[in-house]
Image (tube, rainbow, N blue to C red):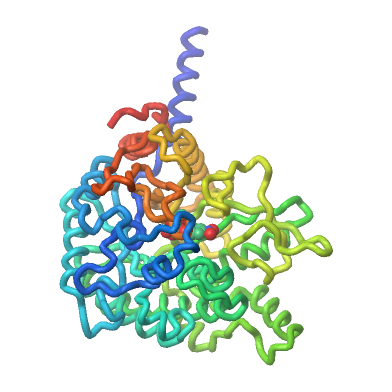
Length: 495
Ligand code: PNW
């Protein structure tokens, strides 16, 4: 009897363990973005981006008045960054290319030799260590001279972005096989044009954000098509954009419809046109804005329509679905006299939904960041239900603290809890193939400056050499990568 019990126990342990293993071929990585880490804002022929100009002209808009002028100095310290990525055992490293570093005037008649050398060095250095480069074309550092021409609200940007994309694929496509065209359209359009808080800080709620939205979808599609037609036949890579999505949980049973409508806004706005058979804007949402615009006295909807030809152009321009996820909201209808409530990054004043957070969701270091791990699993299942049985990649997920403690137990807990939810989503049948930690090391966290830290690795921004120190979370993550499972999660000092 005793032996039987032992055997049963062993079988249970093995079974439980098996469930906590990631599928063979599942890849772990970490991400950074050019403006947040590179520094060297004005070396050689690089021109200023919107973030260079914004941080210099409006330092009060940044929590600590800082900028990315030096940041982590990755422009000079890329060799060390690669060493660290290798030390963690990353399968891939996600970096972004600075458009004004590569194309100083934003157009393709001048290609910076220095910019080309920098990204070649970085990409080759990663490959030498067996780390796959995953490259984002646009992570928010628009050349200022293109902003001066209207930036993302000018439809001509579709052509400018297409030309830029072609140059990038030409220069690096022989070695880069996974591409993200645009990082988080919702932040580019809503935080810039609805909130007016991210560079270039233009407040045009309900108008600018939608012009931006349509142009972004068109620009993504143009960049996807260039790859598909001119590069895919020889390089066989994959291209998609990545969406930042908050999970919208119904406040209670009563508000399932409100939560679903809000998901069509939060996720659908930049997915429906690309990932559904019908294409175009999410219908519930398009109708809602059209009716609202009419009531407001506009002669036509504030949301620019897609022509049938444009719908066809955008539809199907993906090779996978990429999602960045950090947090959730509780959605319910507005009470009389109430406005949208706790700052959501979209919908403020536009949709009649109140977005709240649960008192049990602990807040991380950013105003918008409350922790609710099950949201990630629900989001992945929702995406599969709405957009189909695609390859899903988590392209950002991570946790912020104010303090730079090396013993970052809350970050460890966040990663553990979210990776458990990824495993559950895989068991639910979602084909998740990658997980990307945001971020490899502390960096310039946009309007939070250096006050909020997302790094697996600490960076000392007071030290001119920007000394990097592994946090416990880095060791924890390295161990998950090494064991390819969550079985051994208590052994954090193994690397
Ligand atoms: C993403 N919000 O940004 C970006 O892709 C990263 O560059 C960034 O460092 C990371 O997430 C952490 O913030 C976001 O306001 C910026 O909800 C703002 C929001 C969400 C994501």
